[in-house]
Length: 152
Ligand code: HEC
Ligand code: HEC
Image 1: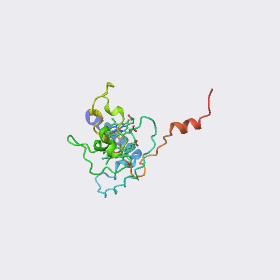
Image 2 (image 1 turned 45 degrees about the vertical axis):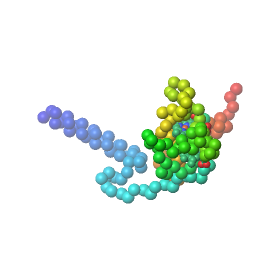
Image 3 (image 1 turned 120 degrees about the horizontal axis):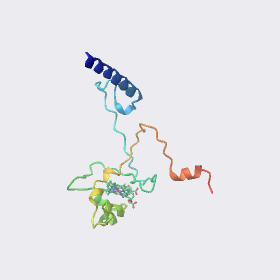
Image 4 (image 1 turned 90 degrees about the horizontal axis):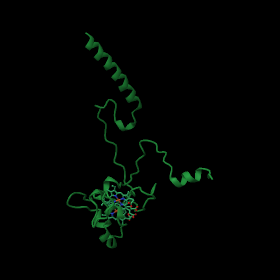
């Protein structure tokens, strides 16, 4: 009898935990119950105004301000590099990928784009007009410095 009692107790505990999770779950989790089918939300329009966005901190990968739909990025072709690689920037007038894109993880500068920087979209993303799912309280460093009284 004992094992049954124990498993019964364990299940009660996990149900309680499940209820707690459901309560605190953000909207990211989808419909309730999860088996209910709901229409997919409409795709958000991408920001493609060609205006380069200010970075939130110096090492931020800059956001992509132009359309990238249909750009091939696979083993054989990298559309991004056809404009952003050093040798094509004169024709394309695109900003050149910076020197870090030519460095391996040990800091050696290579002759070509480093394999770890080949998959551009792992770091650079376009923006859409979508409302954020969670609030963002990020404060830019310059704004932070202005807000704080100067210490001596
Ligand atoms: C046809 C040429 C072209 C292609 C292809 C292209 N870009 Fe661009 N990219 C530009 C130009 C030109 C700019 C400068 C801003 C503008 O005109 O949109 C730019 C700007 C950017 C910026 C902003 C840089 C900054 O300092 O703010 C990023 C990031 C970027 N591109 C990434 C990409 C990625 C990733 C791809 C591939 C998915 C790509 N680009 C494909 C031409 C191109
Ligand atoms: C591992 C992350 C990562 C990958 C992958 C990556 N980048 Fe970047 N990129 C960055 C970061 C971080 C910066 C800003 C700091 C710097 O310049 O190194 C940057 C800067 C840039 C800039 C602006 C350069 C400047 O001097 O203003 C362009 C353009 C760019 N990347 C394009 C690309 C393209 C095109 C690819 C794909 C071939 C790519 N990046 C792949 C992280 C990445």
